[in-house]
Image (cartoon, rainbow, N blue to C red; front, side):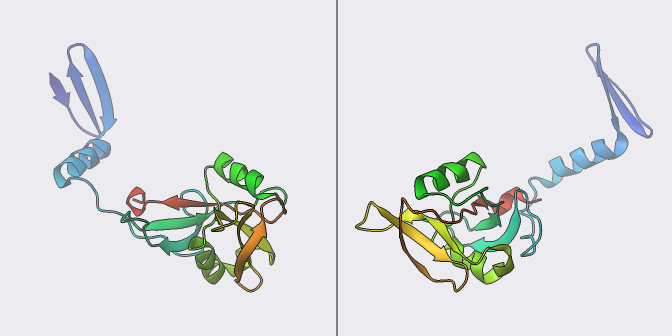
Length: 163
């Protein structure tokens, strides 16, 4: 094995040679010595996140970690509940829930059209109904799944993904 240095570091071993900038080698070595990086700082509400606009932090479900809620782009048109769920999944997100929708309404009201939006959970006791939230006044109530409402998916991001 041969190692040479300067602005770059060249390592030759068994006929294979790799050359990297010295700063890259130093960063890799420091990362290895220090161990894993701690989770990053939660991005500012309203800033661009990994996938969308950061709405805030929601409490973890069933003992899971708290998650950053990022708002994705609107669906191209209003949809029924089944199509809304399919659309959200197709863009790597999910429909807002009864927990994440108020967070979005409270923190980013200007990001939403002042209309009803589909939420994820089906209403208890009614397979034909799912929750909707009004982004004009923040109220939540049940809507027939065959009706067409606005669709603005969200994506939940584990804060440990932020570096």
